[in-house]
Image (cartoon, rainbow, N blue to C red; front, top):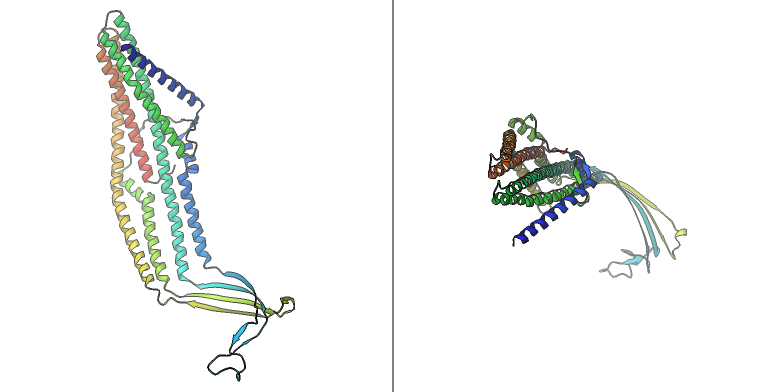
Length: 451
């Protein structure tokens, strides 16, 4: 049974070694990529950003369409007809043969008729279209703000994934160092056991400690692969592309922590979400103006040049082509439209009230978010300083315990405890650095930073 467990352990170790070797071979071929270059590629190739950029183009097209209604329109029309009988006109005929209770008719003209007209329409006064154009311009700005907000979210996601990979790779390194220390401890325990200076339980404990670290190493390696795939997707690249990070994880040095009132004031000015809500109030106001202007008259200048002809047996080449032309003005005034204009005004006013309430609510929530971010930055920064001291102490303690253990002045259990304390201290320091950088990323996302 023991041989089976040993064989199972060797198979797992061999599989892990092959995986790490293959991962190492892939990294040799991987492309080194910095955080700045990842952000730049994501800004250009991210599919979500591409879709939002098309929304800007669509809004611009809608503005152009609205402006076209204030420009002259010129149209050409033509028609050719063939009558099997001459065209019919009522009110003509022989009065002596037409009964008094009926209207006489007669047939005149050619059986073949054709006409061509050139029509022109020039808007002179259209308040509805002008307010619509102004509203569409605001919607263009709205789409740009939405794009900026999406770009800030993508940038924050890139930074978070990049930071996670850096932390995972550092944890992987710490785990490998811990495994190496435990392997050396196992070798020492075996040597002392063979010399009769240690018990078998010390060797078994050292072997168990070593093996317990290997599953975590494999889990971290898989987590790195998954995170790199997510980073490729954010960049709009092939998810299976091999990449390696060119930047390294660094602890903050004398970082100037933000002041809560200053950060809140800056957030009020720069946060895209607040700018969107403020803009939505302006759009709703324009909706009210548009709905009111729909009740005003519209004045349009019109003109036409008409060319007509009639013939028989399709002899258009031998027919007259008289022309008619005119210019004039047309006034359109809605008198009764079923009450929809009043309801549109009411609807737009409700939307304006909603936008104001949402803006106030977002401002109140922003103050809480800023307070939380500043608290996280201060707490994690202090934790980094504390953990740096704890890590330094744990390293000294481990070196001293190892020195005493090698000379028989400390037990194997003390060495295991010292190694565990060192690994825990380094992991806690790494977690503090990660939390601090994550809080900075959240602050940048709050401000709509896209770089």
